[in-house]
Image (cartoon, rainbow, N blue to C red; front, side):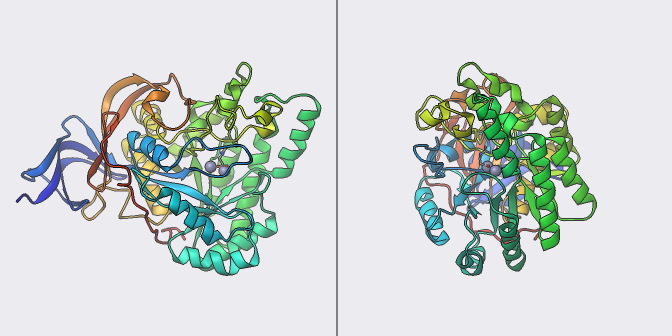
Amino acid sequence: MSTFDTIIRGGRISTASDTFHCDIGIRHGRIAALGEDLGEAERVIDAQGKWVLPGGIDSHVHISQPSGEGIRMADDFESATRSAALGGNTTVLPFCLQESGVPLRQSVQAYHAMAEGACYTDISFHLIISDPTEQVLGQELPALVGDGYTSFKVFMTYEGLALSDLELLKVMAVARETRALVMVHAENYDVIRFLTEQLEQAGRTAPRFHASSRPVIAEREATYRAISLAELSDVPLMVVHVSNREAMEEIRRAQQKGLKIFGETCPQYLTLTEQDLDGLNMEGAKYVCSPPPRDAASQEACWEGLQQGVFSVFSSDHCPFRYDDPQGKLAPKGRTSFRWVPNGIPGVGARLPILFSEGVIAGRIDINRFVALTATNHARTYGLYPRKGTIAVGADADIAIWDPQIEQVLTHAMLDDGSDYTPYEGMKITGWPVITLVRGEIVARNGRIEARKGHGTYLKREISQFA
Ligand code: URP
Ligand code: ZN
Ligand code: ZN
């Protein structure tokens, strides 16, 4: 009988801190040994010439989230985690949206029911707090944090989701009490409403005006305000999907003051610009997301934030709607004004190859920072470390094996998600994850899924390392 179920042999391993060559011995889904010449196993994976990295953790993903009347997200748990695994991810953290008038616990159970038996990667849930009633704040949230839902997202914009400053403070007070981590969508709702009305009155309703309705000022002001409220409340805060220099600098300033303020950016803010919303007819709708992609200088600022550690996590904000679909981007109402185009773009499968190619191969970041930004820091931030996010003895064998030399042009077909497009179509990508193992099982190999649906399991999380 061999000592290991699987040995990954001869690869170049990188963690968030080191790069070294050795074999990885896997037993019962965990890393059991790192060493030279580990002997034989039932399965040996030859990783000569490959880079062996912790599997990606995507901590900002929307799956099957209710998105308004007549609108449907393009991915369910099966298709989203399939695309995630093909793109080198081993864990994703989708949101569970609190629906108005429904007990939060009931919403959580509904998400579990949708995910159960459907996932290829492991999953866990953040909560979205849309209605912080006394019952929610006093009873439901503390109980759910205790049960492992240790982070929640709050919105400063969007009809039905935006919280007032008072409500934000009340949620933060619960976070302080329970040591949950607050994530914030920082855009000034009234600025957006005001500009949207003006644009519509002027007949400027095409998708491209989505960007005009949500300028940098709206994001910067809300970022500053959210940080101020977190400082007052003495809670750590993750500012998600940061798109530009001014918001990034607000986060940097807070960090330099010693506050526990964290930042996240996403592929769309490195690769797309406002101009992409300017497509013929409704094509621009494919790029409608919030905050909107900005300009080349903003892209540079986001790179700087990644290089200098202002942003600790790089996520996809995967929020998929089909384009050519009356329940997606081309919903009848969406054709009347950008205001009604569903917000969000797909990216769970493309996130890692984009950062690998544009970041590591292009020389903007090294491989250790890549690992930190795509796996380790997500695990640390969201209570999954050291079980997830690193390659170490005792950790889950969640591993992506990369071929750093594959050069290809990104097409939607490679991502195999539920959308009918990718906003990154045609990008030249160098490097690709050729094998993804989740807890020691090969889930994806060479663009094909090999594991059974349902191999992915739910993860109850600990308190964030930063709370
Ligand atoms: O446009 C976006 N980002 N949609 C997803 C929801 C959110 O705000 O993260
Ligand atoms: Zn958001
Ligand atoms: Zn999002």
